[in-house]
Image (tube, rainbow, N blue to C red; front, side, top):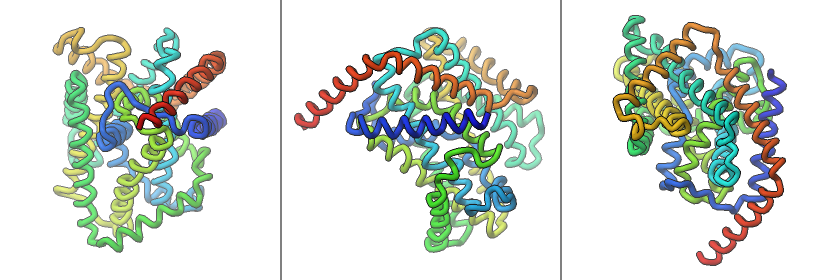
Length: 389
């Protein structure tokens, strides 16, 4: 399975490089273009979930103690699992859904449509399952009944917010600012100051000097992360493509790799300071982490629910608000419990996405003449726009 994963990653990187070489100056504008800040906010909050908030403090000790990760410090390892290069998955799918899918309509083929929606629903449920699994670690003394009840409410809030596209922009921008506020509060708690934080952030440089190590799985746990990123990539590309504001492809790629990686790097550095200093996180800070984590979960579930309901044509406008909420809440919460009480794994979903990548690649190869004509037409439009500008 790891061999399949490694080949898929290399294919993704090569495909992205070819896009940039051939179509780097093509503008990527979606059907609902937004400002760069709003686009990145939507990408950041939809493309990440509660794991960003809750995983690092439990993972730093593992990366510090296990020999497989000895080539870099734990902070650089953590960043490598969450930042920079892996966001290239999202660039590839966003480019595809902005410029290619509207012309070839491969995702309207029944088999591809079925697999796509199955992947979206499964990954959506896994997000809720992660929240369910880690919640007892962050709310001390919470009972199982309260845990399930809170997860049920979060799923309900996500389903309700997905009923109107206006909410996603509001939620994404608001949660981005809340996350920035949480970073500042946690940083102040360390007492490290600007210089201390800066020297810690500099430790992430070991990721870039060892970036080749992160292309293929380091361990089974790293493979889990990579399958997880694959499972998200198709869906996030579909969702955020509509909000792309018209950046050139190379600008879009740089923005998607660099801009989200900056707050991730600072956030992980702040948490790493807590790990190094063995600082306890309690009271209001712990509550703030839970609140931001909850909002991230709502954002993620919102985007995924909106995506599969649109694909399946079971939107709130068609079903009515009450039926829409009841149907999707029952489906999502039921699947969260399925992840909890069965051996279902996100790796299986990621493997299905890799298979979908392969199927799309074969179909695009069969349509290469059509795509070449499309490429020439897009280049002509880009040159005309450049002259007009």
